[in-house]
Structures are given as structure tokens and as C-alpha cells.
Length: 601
Image 1: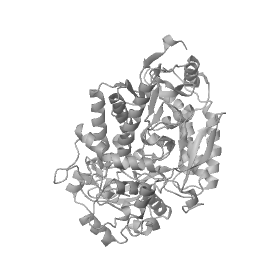
Image 2 (image 1 turned 30 degrees about the horizontal axis):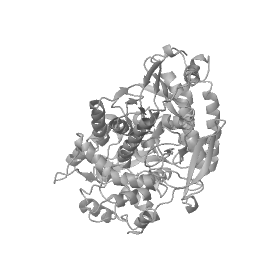
Image 3 (image 1 turned 60 degrees about the vertical axis):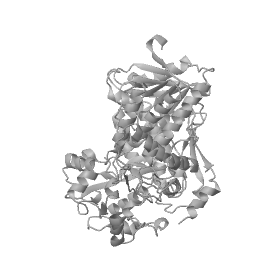
């Protein structure tokens, strides 16, 4: 295609994604002096971050003075079953309080303690109440604040623009190629530094809390550009998503419900989580209803209710109850806060949940229990990055937020997602800006053949007559992932999934769409599907390789945690022929002074 047909923009740093990580990265990049742009697939303010309702995990000590970064670090590592990159967990715990206070300085309106400090609530896996919150709308307030800041700084924003290819000048990033979703016209961004902040992969699954944008774009773009992905087998199924009616299946029910006193019951009315306390957490988890309820009343007893175990433990327990025939009428279980808190408390602390169930399911959560079940929520695996700078192995390519791997190990604690976005979004944006400044004397060059190839690949589905329907392929992909690479996995099912994914990959080369490029959702899906297939293959391949159960990866044929796997990362790259390649890699060694924290009772 000729350059006259191509809309072109030049910046120092281009941030792909406008959620918490993307906005914070753009702000940091701009403040470093770099000419910065944000490119987002949807509208500004529509980011999936708004669905993070419970709070921002930060050891501020406003409710528990004994809380500090060391305890938060230890909780994060233990929640991730010690597979976290220790340096990322350390930086996260140390810097999260400052990032929360920064949000407050920029206008975020947090709930307050009686002393006027930022209020902090309980969440699963955290020793102390440390989630700074705004009712159950924390993510929305965070996006509002960051968006307002970015707009006030004059950062350029390109909305409803999908990036389909990262451009390179030999071995380093040169920019990004994409298209406007409304007109279908192509656009190119020349930049020596790109920050990926594209979120997760949930739309590869049939039941997910994720919105339509989460098709694994950043993971696939990074892999295609030569970056590596780490530990893609770890997919978090949030224990509590809506299960009825079918139109809302998978929509998130915030962990705040359990943090504020909600309990899980089966069809027999039994509070069943006491039967599923793992050995790892015995001694610090209440083993009777009376003891658990005392904790809710005075918070002086550190033996926490079993409903506040890490998410992977709770999701597996719920799955076991449903499989045993003790589920709710719609294949879930019951989450009950109505019998434990008065209506005024529920409506004050959980306003979004009250309205969500009232409007979508005609359920009054102040009077009856909610039906919930596990839903694909978050991927712990992602682009392998340097902890301090957020840079990948490709010079000029950075990643932050859910698209980046390492921070959460095999399982993410609730609330750590929002602080992760702030801490590492800032670091990635700052260092991308520094990188661009250092390379101003070595400007990158975009090669025309790359642009032509990207354009040809984008319009290829229009050239196929009578080919595969993208909606049919997506539905089949979601079934494969839900049934064969879901919350419980086996070798036979994973092997079968890879066979089926290979067939879907072949058929995806024959996708056919009708009409023209303007306002064509079938075409959009046809361009998203290769990304979804890529991340699905990565998940299945790594899940087959890891012969143990750990965090968000459960193998029914290898039900225990195998310590020989405890120091091993699984790294995925594209080989010279463009095929996925998997290698084992030793986890970075933790310094002795941090190791000693795990000896503290």
C-alpha cells in the first residue's frame, strides 16, 4: 500500500491500552518528557479495570498498624505458591502505598475510617485488612482519576483503534500498525518505544468475567515481535461469578461480599469451606463457625474465615461441591450475606452488587442468597519483563498489568491487580520514556514491506469466499478451552485440546467475512481470533508440561504440589519457523533477607 493511503503518527512512546496500567504508564511517560500517545481498542473510560470492585491492596496500616510491606510481600508470595518473581513482589509491596496516596492527591475519593484515613477492607489471602476502597466501585474511581489526569496533561488518545502488528527496525521496536474500528482505515504509529497494557485472555473461555476486549492481543503481539511469555498455564478462575440468568453468566461478584461477612453454602445449607482448608493454611484459618464469626466481629483473632482463603483454593472447593451434587439449581453454589448483615449495611458497603443482582437477576441480596460459581477471570502468565523497568527481551517493548507475567506467580491475591497496575504501569511508562530519550539520536525506521504485509493480513478474510465463519470458530474455541483446559485438567484432555486447537488454527486461515471494512464486527472478530488461538495454545501447552497442581493450575492426574517444580518457570517463544517453543527456566533466586520473612510466624 502507498504511504498516501496510510494515516501516520509519530511519538516517542505509544501505550496500547487505556486501563489502569495503560493510563498510569502514559502519565509517567509524559512526565518523563516523552511525546506520548494512548491507543485503545474501546472508548476511554470503558477499560476492564472498572470491573475491579473491591479495592487496591497496599500496606498503609490505616486499620492494622502492624501491617507493612514485608507482610504484604510475604502474603503475595505465599498466595502465588512461591512462583512469583520475588523482585516484582517486593517492588509492588514497597511502592503500593505511595501509588494509592498519589491517586488521592489527584482527586480519588476513598472511603474513610472514623479517624479520616483511607479505609481498608479484608480480602482473601491478605493477613490484614489492606484494600483501599471506594465502596465496591474502586476500579471505576481509579479509572476516573487516572483518565482525568491524562486528559489534563494533554496526552493524545486514539480511541476505538485496534493494533494488529508491532513494527520492528531489525531487532528493536519501531512502532505499531492498526486500523480504526469504525471506518476500517489503516493507521500507523511510529515510535521507538511501545508499552503493552492490553489486559487478559478471558474471551477464549465460554464463562468469563472479562469483557469483549480481552482477546489476548498484547500476549500475541509480543510473541509475534520476538518477546517471551512466562507461565501461561496459570489462569485464575474467580470463585464467585453470576450463574443465572444465562445472559449474565460469568459476571463478577466481588470478593468484598466475603470480606464483609458473606459465607458460602451448598444446597444442604452447609457452610462447606471448613472441609477444604489446605494444610498450607491450617493454623491461621478458623476451623469452626464460632471462631470464624468472632473474627468478623472484632478482627482481633488472626485465624481468618475459610471463605477468605486465596481464590484458587476457594474456586476448587466450589467446583468440588458442584461435582458432588451439592450445587444450586443452576450449577453454582450459594453466597449468603443476607442472613449475616442488615440491609442498610449491605446497601452502604456493596451498592454495585445490590443493583447488579436486582437489575440483572431480580435477586435482592439483602433478603436472599446469591447463586455463584467459578468464572475465568485473570491470567497470571504474560510477557516476561524486567521487574525494575518493565522491558521485555525486545528493545523498546514494555509491558505492564495483566499482560505482563511474573508478579503474581501461580495465583493472584484479590486487590493486588489494581496496585500492580499502578506500580508497574508507572515503572514501564517511565522507563519507556527514558529509552525513547536515549534513542533520539538513533531514530527507528519503519520498513514498507512490514506495513504492506500487515495490511494484506488484515484484509485477507475479505478475499475468502464461503470460508469459515469467525463466530462459529470462536464458539468452538471457547468450548475447547472451557471443557478441556478449564479449572481441572488432565493429560488426556490437554492433549486433545492441543489437537483441536491445531485444527482450529488451520481453519482460522480460511476465515471469511462479508461486506466492507466499515462497522464490521465479523471482521473485527476475524482479526481477534488468531490472538485468541495463540494464547489458548500457550495455556494448553504449558499446562500439559507442568505435571503438578499449583495455584491456578490444577491437574487431576497430578493433584499435589511437587517441590521439584517450585523453582521452575515455563517460557514460551516463537521459533525460527514461527511455531511455539517451550523451555524450562530456573526462577530467580530470592535474597536471604527476604527468605527470612517466611520464617516469621
